[in-house]
Length: 118
Image 1 (cartoon, rainbow, N blue to C red):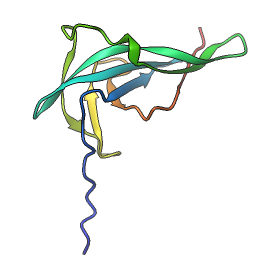
Image 2 (cartoon, one colour; image 1 turned 120 degrees about the vertical axis):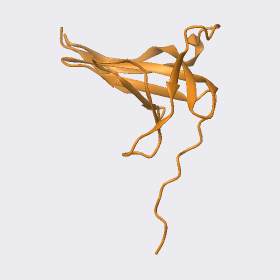
Image 3 (tube, helix red, strand yellow; image 1 turned 45 degrees about the vertical axis):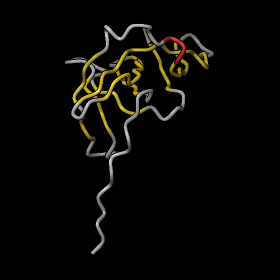
Image 4 (cartoon, rainbow, N blue to C red; image 1 turned 90 degrees about the vertical axis):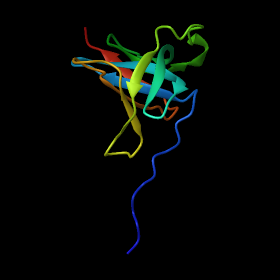
């Protein structure tokens, strides 16, 4: 019988993770890995760039990570324990407690659709 266990992709300094969510809106928060230890990683929040604006009265569009907005200091970096998603087999980091956008997943480089109905 073949072993079908997936191996967890390698985690590198510079990898970008994204947390998305909301109730009547969808937000995207990007994080960049700046340090890795055996059991955790240090992530800093980075900005986003709008790549597509909505064309009606709702505030919607798409965003991507803005890698030029990385803070020069890692003093505000979040220390996050390494967890593995049972769904994807990749790393996932808890970046907030409670509310929305709690977990950050590896960003695939594609624009994230955002909207706000307010």
